Length: 399
Image (cartoon, rainbow, N blue to C red; front, side):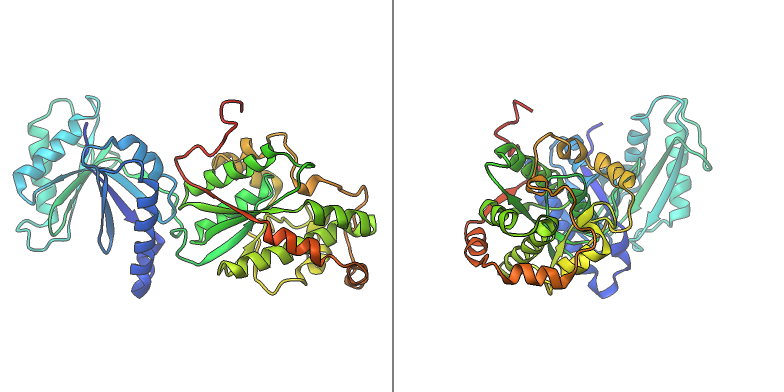
């Protein structure tokens, strides 16, 4: 069947009262961004619904895009028709006949246009009778129908839909401010970014790149992760920081047990500077309490000291198995497990301090001048934009 519209239903946004317009406008922007490859498709936004007018575009790829856009509670393929009784009946019949013979059905009519002369209950009966009389082998079942044909009679048109497809829910990415995601290339940080986006946070990413200890494929892995995350909202900018000189100096000058703590503090300082420069209001990390040496309470206490920015940690209480499950669900797991090291695996001490003391960190940092390497890292930062529906990988044919 050639549907002509996709009807989008809001979820949590419907409860936002006076702020609803802010959230629905952001959702409209995100949907437009995702359907850019289909230029004939156009969007119409109303107070409690959004409509994608397909104008001949194939619906299958747009349906796949809608499955991933935060802020969509559910959506349906729809036939739009005039607010005229016979046209509505014919659209309902057309939709039913697209199902296999023997499929039971139910009519669920909702009349928001009170100028339409027939009430919802009466329309249910009239449409049901018409469909039953003009089809063979399609029984009525109002309790457990094979297809629930939903009819929405609105001000300017009527929309007839069948299957209700579940969206990801949440809030539209970008409706709750912006965060800088510390994207290492591992399993955890993309999941943290995904969960932040689900609460309406727009993400930019920061990645610390340490060639020749990390190679271009490690960098590409991060770009691919950012592109995968972009399908849940909008484009993702990646700030790629040349970290080699600073990381090597930390390794050479800081006692081995404390080198990881000092390295993480440097990362936090650089992230704060980049965030401040670009008007970003928070940092986000993939830390999970107790998972590795730098993620103990004592380590986070020592590392957090260097920034005044709020740090979002969506994974902080999650088990690794739960994080992996989400990574697989959002298609980042296979990318994250490509065998290319990131800077966090370079120069890892055999016995890092799991309970570093702030006074010792202050002592070690106070005796060594890292300012030249620090500033070079910030000045040399490269910005890459990862877009949905685009192949950003020069290695695509080899992976």
